[in-house]
Image 1 (cartoon, rainbow, N blue to C red):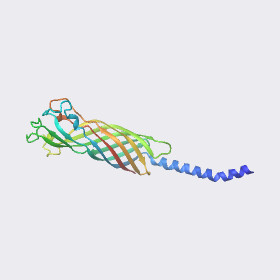
Image 2: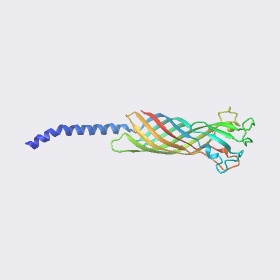
Image 3: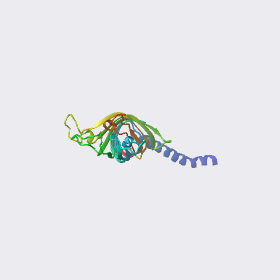
Image 4: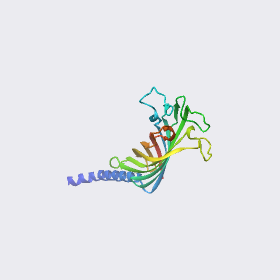
Length: 234
C-alpha cells in the first residue's frame, strides 16, 4: 500500500519532468529549420596585409618598387544573405568592406597615377564578396549553440589611384583590380529564438601577389577579420 502511495506522489513529478524535457526538445528542434532564408549585418575588425610588401630584410633601403610605410587595419562591416538547405547546412552570399590602407612610397617611386604623376602616398580600399557552403555542428544536447565552418569562393577587389586608369573610360574611384580566390571562415552560432541569431567568427579572403619588378601593380590584398553578426531568420 505504501509503495502504491509513493508511486502516486511521484507521478506529478515525473509528468512535470517529462513536460520540461518535451518542451525543451520542441523549442530547440524549432530553432534550426530547413528550407528558409536569413539575412544579417556583420561588424568587426581586421587587416588587408599590405605589410607583406614591405622590405623586412633590409629596412634601411628605400626601394622605389616597394612601399616604405604601411598603416592598415581597423573596423570592417558587411551584409549577408543565406539559405538553410538543411538543419546543419546553409549556403551564404556575403559582402564585406575592410578598413582603408594608407600606403607610402619612397621618393623616386616606380608608380604613377592616371595623369602621369609619381605616387608617393595613397589610400587603398578593399572590399570582398563570397559564396560559401556552411556546415554546422551542435555543441551539446538540446542546445542553442552550434559551431560552424564555411568554405567557398571569394572575389576580392582593390581600388586606389594606381588602378584608376581605365580603357573603358570609367571615372576615377570606380576601377577595380580583383581576383577570384578561396574563402574560409569558422566560429560559433547562437540561436536565441526561432528568428534571432548571434554569430561570432573569423574569416579569411585569399588575395593575389606575384614576384615581379613592380609587385604593387598586380597585388590584391589578402583580407581577414574577426566579426560579430546579428541575423534574422524568416
